[in-house]
Picture (cartoon, rainbow, N blue to C red):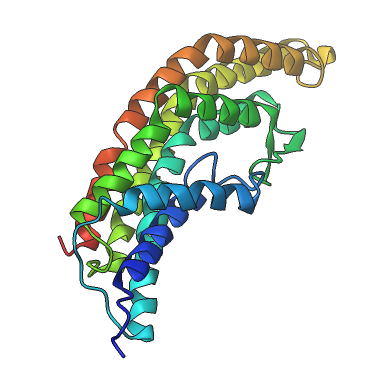
Length: 258
């Protein structure tokens, strides 16, 4: 009896592993509020479409080797999606810092999409960043990145699964610094307000500035300034997202052996 060639099936499985892993890590589809059936419903047809772009590859025919190869595909997909997710969260990080400085972090809320607790400003910023993700066609760029990765690094050709670590660490550092820079002007404003209240409190101890007038003024002025600064913050976020494919390509190169 002739042997059945399972190579097409195995290649399709590896493509699906990479696609599903990226969808699990990237914004929107990676949110906890998205049912698993919906993710599978997106990953399966997308993997089927991208399968036809895969060049001829050699797939190991033993189960241990196949498990190792599939693990590499999952790591690559998660790393690619995680880069986009981290860059999308820069505005949310800045909003959390601002909330803490103007006094809005005392009341937290549960975000049903991410399953995490945060301030109302952080949840609003995350919603705006998600809208920006679609407005800048990042969802289409993610598909293009997947197709490009299958051409440049076909399934079964990953030789350095941990090569993405340094790139992810660098992206995390960049996002942290960007969030601090975006929040910097409003944090400086809050510091100046607190300094002014401290001076006024020394001059008129009976006014109770910190617990009445000061808190209300800081919150109201902080929200107004954040509303004025938010368009510029989203513009910076859009520019950052458009540069996401540099780190993504570096991850592909590093995991392919450089």
